[in-house]
Amino acid sequence: MGCGMSTEDKEGKARNEEIENQLKRDKLMQRNEIKMLLLGAGESGKSTILKQMKLIHEGSYSRDERESFKEIIFSNTVQSMRVILEAMESLELPLDDQRAEYHVHTIFMQPAQIEGDSLPPEVGAAIEALWKDAGVQECFKRSREYQLNDSARYYFDSIGRIAAPDYLPNDQDVLRSRVKTTGITETTFIIGDLTYRMFDVGGQRSERKKWIHCFENVTTILFLVAISEYDQLLFEDETVNRMQEALTLFDSICNSRWFINTSIILFLNKIDRFKEKLPVSPMKNYFPDYEGGADYSAACDYILNRFVSLNQAEQKQIYTHFTCATDTTQIRFVMAAVNGMLSLLSTLWMKALSNNTSRHHHTRESPTLRSHIMHLFFLSKKKKKKEVPAS
Image 1 (cartoon, rainbow, N blue to C red):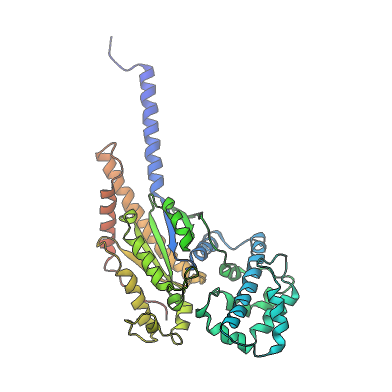
Image 2: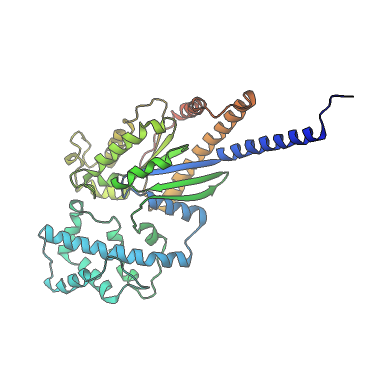
């Protein structure tokens, strides 16, 4: 009799092959998954980028979603005015029109969280009147001396619309709303052939100890810096310059052992506010080695070089973009460039992995292989012309 395989053995072999093929397919699908970690100090724009990704890839917010942001926007607006009024006391800046004291009382009577479908008429009237006061305007000009939400002026300028009984937030209202991120938030998007899993973590110092749980197998880091904060102090520690804190954080992330083989995309964000500030708040006052005066391009080059020069790994490429996270058109363009880069990297990685596994049937993914592929990719991009910030 022959020594051929029994029917049971053949079925077992077929099952094993099917399982093995499925594992290969799963591994290839994972290569199409981009696990992106959003890092940066508090208020650098991470949550705004996530909102932009939704707008760009999932379309505008639904009516119900817009409704859900109303109370946040009301609270942001009222609290921003309260912050200015408190700062006026500490800076000893008087109201220009003392009759506006009635409106000051109205603002201080409001709770921290404004609830309801519409802003109370007396609150809207108070904000509108106070925003026109010369004393309030003078205090606003000195906002670097205290902690004021970046969106304050936008909401104050729009108070007539926001205080209307039938108010419904538009996309820009939603983008500029601010809620402190605590813990870790995961958002998933599908862009072309790639699935993005984006993790937003709390930027404040007290939240950073939680980042460790996101570190394993990260494809890339999107690190945001609010470059407009070169003249501001931390919310948590008003002895520390925000830009210096961002440099320290970037240094620790860029050169961390967790991220030896991880690409980093650096968004130098809030360029609109940065450009406004330069002529009135000299950067040399905070960075004595800066010699570019109020020249926008020189200031951008200086900040870019301060961050990129922290990279101690020759094989690690830092991809930089100057951004305004509230500008949907610009973020759409920038994220298309980022997606193209990551798509190419993913393709190279899949090909290399396929070739490697065909030669070594059960070889596990090698950090050396990953590093080599990334090094080849970065070398191919090294001659790319440096991005020039929009003037």
